[in-house]
Length: 314
Image 1 (cartoon, one colour):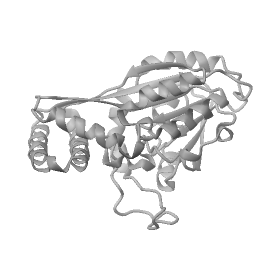
Image 2: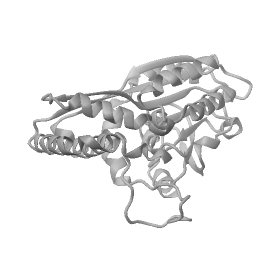
Image 3: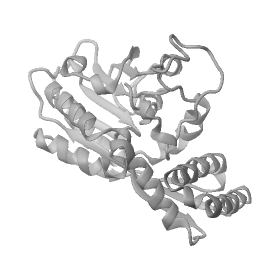
Image 4: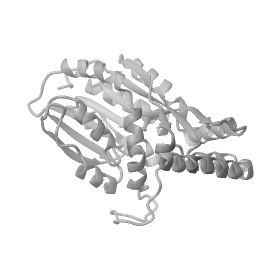
């Protein structure tokens, strides 16, 4: 819904950050394209590039407690209703729907109608046990999310979303999930830590500058998971967190290259004095990546908030 496009992008554009969505230079026009208030558009090519790494990183250890909670919810004739916030091209649904049993109806939220089209077309059609999976799309802004928007929800999901929310937006999300009485599975929030091998003297400074970039304009950045855990716990939810790192080696060189460009670019935008040394740093890192000599671990955290069931959960 707003922030999040296969992650947070959302409308926050991830500010050219780690989960950078590359703006589309050309493509099918959307209503209002070109106006100042038109939502940013992000390249499906980037979202497809990161999708395998996202799927490999997401914390399977959170699925069993999620399944237990879902099994205890009242059943619906049309199956489990899942609201995927900031769905982007729909990678969360493609990953999760085939891992859950039973009929499912996914409600896909995003600001960008272009991405919503991709998400609907590529949505999975069957669950783990062969039950039917259906989808609908809703264009909207997460900042205006209300409990009514989640009426009937059995599960709320999002991918790479929390770190590009403000504290106020996060509070709105937690309150809406609590009012709906449904669990929330919120994956791939940046943790503010990166490991590169071989090491380089500038690694720590680039990381620090990038983290500062994520926090600017009031976004939560690497503080998001801690803030989310506190926000959901304040509504009585049981919260579990689990690491979900990207592990990028020679087989993920294309993703590592694009991630490096966005990561260093955001750091330089935050600290212009880094421009020259960061340029040399990036050139060295890209050369090592092309030679198959670079290993990168980008730390993320997945969060499962088990909100107290209410009469609104069905």
